[in-house]
Length: 401
Ligand SMILES: O=C(O)C(=O)C[C@H](O)[C@H](O)CO
Ligand SMILES: [Mg+2]
Image (cartoon, rainbow, N blue to C red):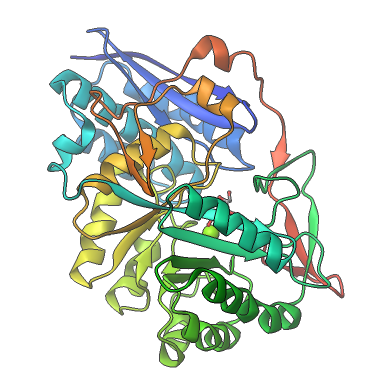
């Protein structure tokens, strides 16, 4: 079997997505997600100009060799652009292999380890009451786990809080600016979870994303303050470039920690995992070199009883979601999967076999990863330049968004 051609489809049904399609001489094709929020065209060019020419004529079954060829062969290793491009190729090749086998992808990984994949929803609101009403909305849909974010009194445009119903951080045009005050946030955050436990009791898993905003000692303080509300996890409490920072947080709190949505290789997570400084690894298919590399990260994490909790915001396309759900159904040390529902127009471009029922998702039984792209629909929505926001402290200092 041979790869005959491959091309990139950039489309903007509600938001931008980059998709790689690989075709073979036997008529079977595979697709992979290559979306890197706010830097989409860099990955599209990396694929079109540098990767696709190296794929033509290769046997699509040689997934491992092609992965090594693209990783070691580039000489310039790691980084989000490189690893998203490799992920797209890898996902498309697993899709092809599973289609040829006539099996859903999870069967090739080792079969199912569970009946369904527990997912968490995003509840948010400008006020605590608004956020609680959204929690109720997701409880009514059967969710067992809910992330809660709310506006901080006195701050405009806080991370995770929607202007309308659904939160979408990327905005058209140049980056939006939002304000940040650690002092205001630290005083407010525990009251949000006190309200949630008061109204919803203890059966619900509650999650929270700090989105890299705190210093290690501030994160330690927040972790301690949240302990009475027994969170499922506190996510990205401090930036993780310096993995050692997490030791300080760990020394002070038993609130479980989740990190890794911005990681792109096992090397970004290695010290955190081996020193048992986190509880959940958030890395997902598209940003970490595909199924092939994510499997290595999960296997390392398993040795230290660290579980997976894959990133699943709206910028992870349905193609990534489909592949991640196959991975989640198989991976022995599964924790949870994030789910932000895509807009209807996105779903119309990406028909998929996965489904949701009572807080659990299932990848479906279609051969491959079960997600396709309708290219005629995709062509109706051309790329729109959009960026993630930046955050500034109240005195104007640029901060971590
Ligand atoms: O879903 C999350 O936990 C996020 O932090 C969402 C990110 O801000 C978003 O995916 C960035 O592209
Ligand atoms: Mg996050």
